[in-house]
Amino acid sequence: MRVSVRAASKISQSLKTSFISRNSAKTKQTSNFNSSYSRNFTSSTMRSDPFKPAQRVAGQKQDVWSIVNEAAAASPVQPIVNMGQGFFGYNPPQFVIDAAKQALDKVDCNQYSPTKGRPRLKKALAKAYSPHFNREINPETEVTITTGANEGMLSAFMAFVEEGDEVIVFEPFFDQYISNIEMAGGKVIYIPMHPPPGSDTKTSSAAGWKINMEAFEAALNSKTRMIVLNSPHNPIGKVFSKEELQAIGDLCVKHNIIILSDEVYDKLYYVPFTRVANLSPEIGKLTLTVGSGGKNFYCTGWRVGWLIGPGNLIKYVSAAHTRICYSSVSPLQEATAIGFEQADEHNFWEESKKEMKGKMGKFNKIWDELGLPYSDPEGGYFVLVNMAKVSLPEDYHFPPHVAERPRDFKLAWFLIMEVGVAAIPPTEFFTPDNAHIVEDWLRFAVCKNDDVLETAQERLRGLKKYIK
Image 1 (tube, rainbow, N blue to C red):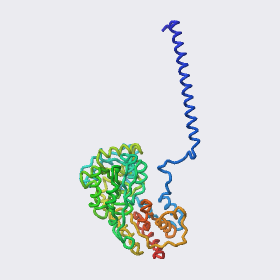
Image 2 (cartoon, one colour; image 1 turned 90 degrees about the horizontal axis):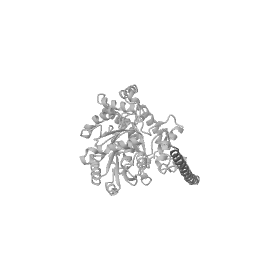
Image 3 (tube, rainbow, N blue to C red; image 1 turned 60 degrees about the vertical axis):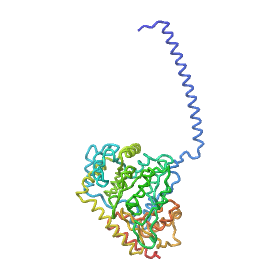
């Protein structure tokens, strides 16, 4: 194409003007960038600590798990009998292990699962739980799979709790509840449970731990977004009665409050067990129920959890889960699905319950022998033991990070170092204002092999000389 001299001159002039204009703008942008960079650089260099942590993690004391495990490793009595953390001392049933091994041979089980969970697991859970919820659960809309129950609860908080919202938690609480709520911007409101009168001198049922319902109702207000329930309860071993759950559920309906029901020990109950979601259609519409494959099948390291609830709530939990970790481990979801599909033919649930109740009864004989009262569990695999009668030597040296904590931390440290048995101090599951309620108690996990329980009993007899 030919271009005239005049046209070429105009194009040349236009390009020249454009070039000058662009360079002028570029010079201005560079100047603005340099000015902004200078301000930001000056601001950052003026910080006293450029690595200051976010408030959500700053100022936290060393957690109880680290304290107990480090003490256990340093104990002169070895090997330590670890009855602290609630991990199992034995493998999952063989049919579940076989399912996990076989899943690794499947191509799709080694790739991403759908963010809401593998269809096989959702269907298996819907089929297994529908009879327990007295309704047909839709696996596509009313079930979501999470990376353990803990991440599932975090997803629920992230889905519904905003800055300034209040979440009611009953003390004692599983410690992860608190950080999860605060991570979502929520404010935790604590309502303590109290042991029955005389529990420091005689053994009593875990059912005797009660919520002050007047205090609970008084705490409800327009900012209350959610409450957290845990039944069977960790660490108490209490199974909330139908009457207790009904009273709590009715108040939540009245004030339109979501119930997050942590039921990870739902296969280990030794008294009648009620699911809060079943109490009425109105309560069911507000309830998200949390479950755990790790607790069900003795494989806490698998990190397979789930939430079951109304579709209009579950979809937002799924949305939050997608942003937190996208999807959960595929082969272990597959194995958990097969576990549920085959559990009944192996009579696994009944055998599991019978076995754990037997371990609980066998182990707790040591407390009767020592004359130390305990809270007789109705479910789960933890037992709280009152050690007010144990007299710690006045001149015993405790490290500063233990000496500054309540008496139960000192009791735990003493047992680890002198007796060789690890337990968890339950004040970790209370606020400082209410820690006095359990400062004489320790929590023991009995989900161990029988020979471990027998070794623990033998070592605990060493406490006799310290019991007043």
